[in-house]
Image (cartoon, rainbow, N blue to C red; front, side):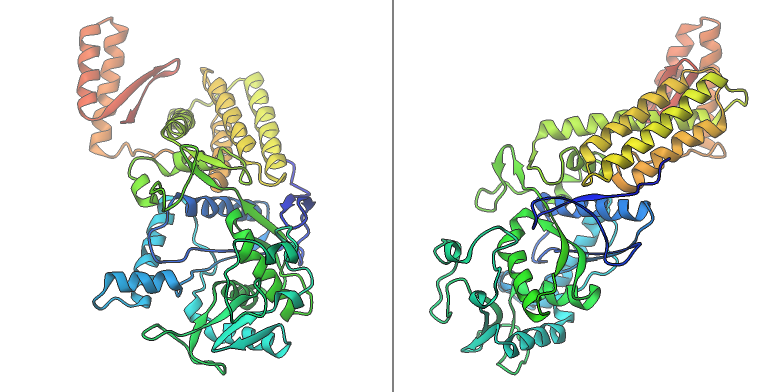
Length: 479
């Protein structure tokens, strides 16, 4: 296998692919905006979770030391409203804890590894207050009736991430009208507390942070003033990430917040935008009752992360079918590994080794090209074809079977679409019984006792065992 020498990432700020050069050789500092924990995560949340899970896993797989940070927004208007709706003894911290617990349950079903650091806003109030105070001191921020606002017209370059100019933004419909603001585009850094709301004490009054300031403060605390990669959904580019850039660079004398910005595309439901108003959202925990982790990840990775992705029943059926093909190939290889001969065939071994080398190199070339997972999945199927062709040989080598399984494992470590089949122990009484029945069936077929062979197949079916006859003999899998 050729070790990847370069990675190109599409930098949203520059709107082109760029050679990735980390700040420190061999190390990657990566921050991705996490969920506001007022409800269960939906498939829109799942896309960045899987996209950046794959990115950080791939970087690790080729030798980078990655520090991966994904935050929780655990104080926000939505959490306050949720606590009010639930009533009783529900508070904002209790709401947050409930859905953070659910979050970890759900990402496990997605095959998403926990981030190295999962900072919570409420645990970083000192950092946030100091950050806001620094902006006030530098006159990039001002206080009005307990609220603190950022002066967008003082920050040269506001709008550069989302490619918008300040003048057009001042007339844009997305900017809230607020008489306390000096300019329509100014955004809130700190909100004065309303009666009954959760609050923290500050020099400018009791209140809580605005949404944008939270990520800037937490990224700085855990990764430094400038980080390698900042990621999130395309919907966060403006205003959230734009405001992060402005406040961070203002405080740090123009130092970039991130050298590379990555944004994943939207998810649609049956060609319609997913939104609460349309009532077409799908919770991850509901969806995962009817689909495997591998199949859902396959669906998510089947489109490039920057492209829109359409969720439909047909797309899920196709993903399930594709993953089943991969699983069957792995099961066949595992079966042969348990019944391996030691002879092999020189020509077949050479052809397999060459195929595995080519597939592995192509996979790395694709993943190093802005994490091109759709085409990387074709490499998985090239391995399926190569494995199936090799398994048609009467005699195979254990070392070659291990090469096949090792490459499947390498793909699965990053993509998560080809998990290894469970290895059944022959010491298990049920497994021993199945093996005996298979031997009896094989003998019945050899002697053309088709009636007994059919009886055994039915008997195994009652045990939820499916038999598949291959050129190398019968094998069994659980339904």
